[in-house]
Length: 205
Image 1 (cartoon, one colour):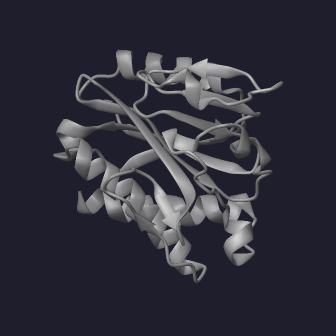
Image 2 (image 1 turned 45 degrees about the vertical axis):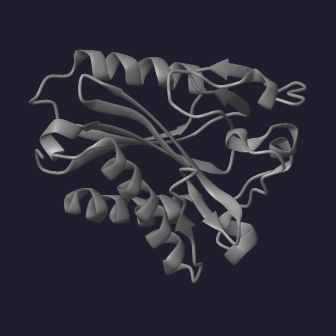
Image 3 (image 1 turned 180 degrees about the vertical axis):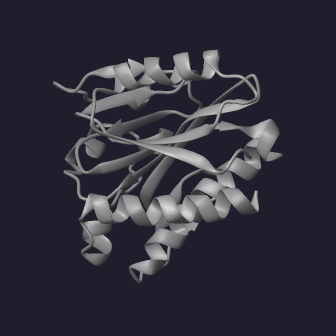
């Protein structure tokens, strides 16, 4: 790794524009390019993975649906959700896809634990869960041994849009956020804590 990763805090940005920026960054990087993690919130949008089944979008209503190039099924992004896009050179990190998934999940689990919340990943359904409710969704794209997309942690959201989809392809999967489970709704606080835990988990590789 070249001196860990650089951080970009993008604020609230439309997902399509950030997706295009991630693709350009990944296509243009070399083995000397420093890894980056981008933190962002998106206006309301549903995204469907590359091989996702559109039938899992039950009633999008006025929320746009965008097919993207990550793995996984359908998920929702909206204000109050902290998205961490991980633009990493996996070859340099000596990290496989499963190792990256586990590192991202564990960073969220560690962050939740700091707020007194017991969370866990699931091998059969990537992401992070609290008492069976999904707290964070995960989807990745690997290109030339480099990753983009990442993990989306629900902090302080309107959760109603999840009722209009089968989250991550699971019918009636309950979804929660940190505000609901522990009262922590300050997205900037969570961003700082998640960044610190990502640095630890990715260093362990």
